[in-house]
Image (tube, rainbow, N blue to C red; front, top):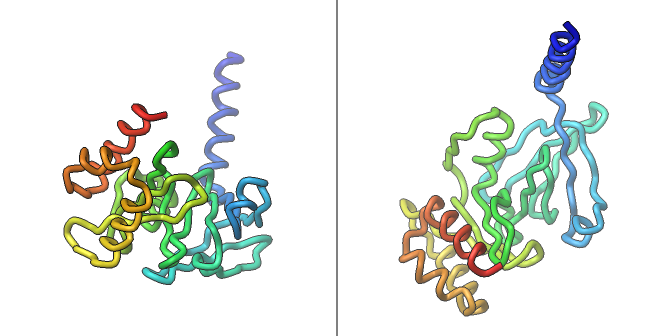
Length: 193
């Protein structure tokens, strides 16, 4: 009988948490603030919008604030780290951290977190990015179905600045789909910790 009561209480607690609609959002203006855990905490992610000039609207004590992502380093949304591409203001969610850091389309991942799904819908922005660590610039991959000369330029700069990743790019075999890039980053980080 006690086990039934315990399970009922746990179910109620989980239900209240799931249906409360309460988020945890912590905004970091700089990488140093992120490292030192100095961020502005908000109660709720109200909205996110924009393509190149992405903005997030957050709420704290029922007061809404809109933030231009280009003006911040990144944010934590319910435990998920999002970084801003300083050049464009788009955001990417950190998926893999290691010798290479790998990010996927921020808008798609915000949707998945908000809706509780695992289906990615990449309709706006770059599909994925790389960086050498959490403080370095994000380098976008051009979307396979939408070639982008700016993304190509940024990736060429990344390759020139980081020749130690030549084997990684060779393994990609010019397949820049996010599924292939993610898989190759995981293998690369496993082999070169």
